[in-house]
Length: 67
Image 1: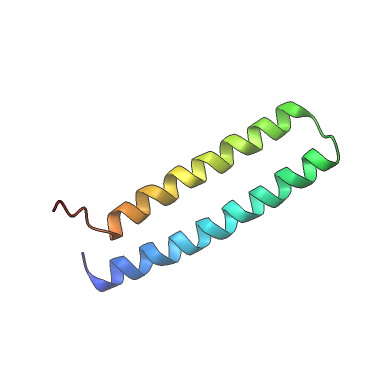
Image 2 (image 1 turned 90 degrees about the horizontal axis):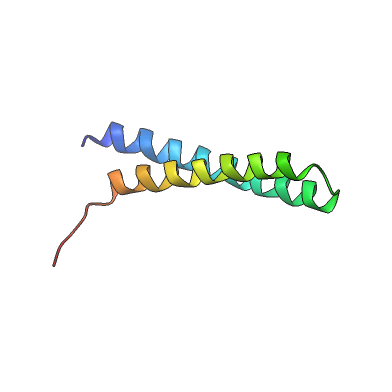
């Protein structure tokens, strides 16, 4: 993998981490305001999708070393 590809992936990881944190804050605010539970559940699913995407990108950068 080239340095440019790694830099692009790291930038995407950074963006996704910020988006994940934003979803977390939004979910906590929705819970505090007693919003619609279905809407909260949808937000949680989106947050989980972001986490899965983050892990997949991090796995691309960090090689799997079997000792």
